[in-house]
Image (tube, rainbow, N blue to C red; front, side):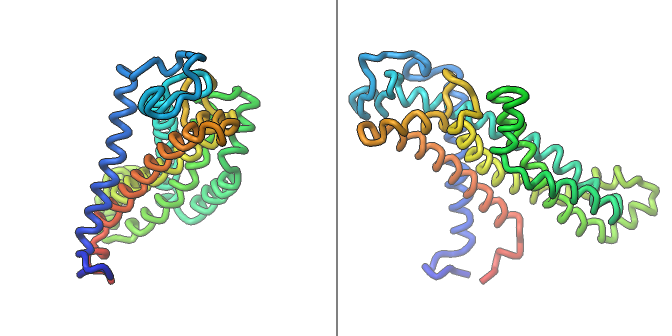
Length: 281
């Protein structure tokens, strides 16, 4: 089968997977590398070299306090990806657990859990961050909790929907007849059969978490200075948009490429895991 451009559909899906994996892998390498090496001190100020354009004050120029932007971007990758990863892990662990429990414990328990999660889903990360910020103060922990709590209902709904289909299979009935408990069946039979869908969802939610972290940092609810963050770089750049547009373009491009990579990776994994798309029109 080919698409409207004459390219094999399998090749197009494989290309999405490769590009997504390459972009995601690149940012992971950059984040890890920043722990050991950056071109300059990402927190060091040099007022005499402030607002230098790319190619003059380093590869990507310097910011309003003379920091090397390439170094800040590298160090900011560790912050942004770290917060997004921790938030996704938190939301995924709690949400998947609740989704499995809801699917395996009957309709009454399922309705109760999903109703509570529906109320929780009504609070976006910004409102959660404001509430948590009032209690804990702005910082990385606030961002992780705010984004993670918002993701719990997302993972729970997807897990519950996928698990409910598995519970109707014949081998689940056979497991009951063998004397296995609902918890054991959920862990041994249900979870392994929906793991592929959950992995895809983790990559997609990770991209959304990066956007959420950038938004929270932009609003001052994320990490505090001088810790580098892509969202804070955008917030600091708005005063210099006309005189030094690279201050906004560089972190904005970093966020866009990171999210694009994770979305392409998620789409590629989803197409690879779904055999129905192999010859779909």
